[in-house]
Length: 418
Image (tube, rainbow, N blue to C red; front, side, top):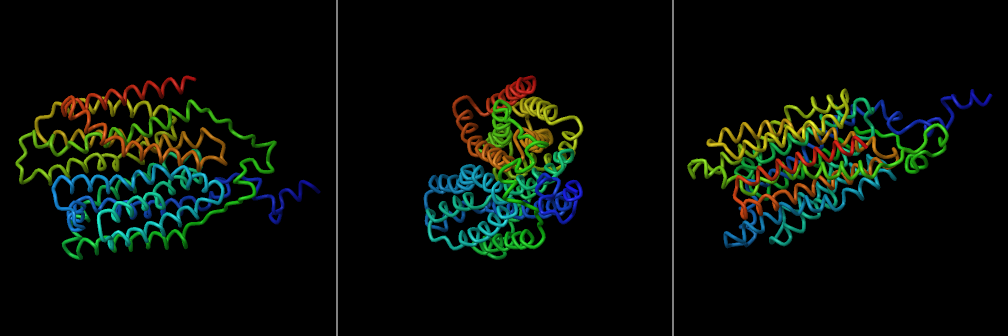
């Protein structure tokens, strides 16, 4: 009799006895598609201001060239700083209240703030709104939490690779759109268009994304199934290694950004073409990542996350070195494509490993910390790269970053051997 009740479809406890990923097995592919679209849309909207940000800062009353450069950098970095601060909080709330509410919160919040940026009256409001966009937004981060916890463990690497491809495509295409839209609808109109795009993503999230979340059991981990599914003990050395590696990925990618235009100028590129060629070279790493992110994520499913992480760290470190010896801009562009191809395998493999390192009830929080580490690297990378370039020369940026990546590979190997 008890066995019949336990397996009865009408038993209200039957769903609670099943894990979160198992209950959402029907929805994860559809949710992945919406998350890819939403991550692409939000990152297009956030990155499309790059070509005209200095113009907007000047339009808001900043006059001197040095002040325009300074305020542009502060406004651009404010969003990443905000996301780095709040990503663990949103991840923890996702564990407590579900992943879908966090997606809706991010999309609706970013749609509103993006539109408000188009109505800024001065540069202080611009910086404040960019910071708020990071604090309340983070759709791509929330998507990583949903996909990382819903996809079956044997497909998690591939799914996170697909999600990473959408985000990278948004970062790649955003500046291209930002170079066109202001000429058609004006700078302020471009922000309204960005807000509208994110609003579409919000509607898709609200009406298409499905989630079977049980606060009474999912938020407490094992819930009533304490005998058959013991909580996974957290290995803090592995977690620390994962977070350091995640930060290094973005640090390596962004370390050259502050000086890349100057570096390309030293390669005999004419001043009239410098900005355009610098933009192409900056986009090359994202292009390379788009080509391999899903494939390397699937490879992590087959051969293990540690193997992909260590291999990609070493390969990326090796590819960094010849960038210091190029004599033509197209050589640098080609090497940046290769670097993007090797970097692409890191984030999906790291996220997959992060999910496996903690109990299911804490995966959202763990992936939130992971996103925070990535955005910290995105903030710290340009600062470190700029300082190294000033103190030791432009070429040394590549040597130092490459060495840090190889050291990080050694750290990952040590953590795996434990």
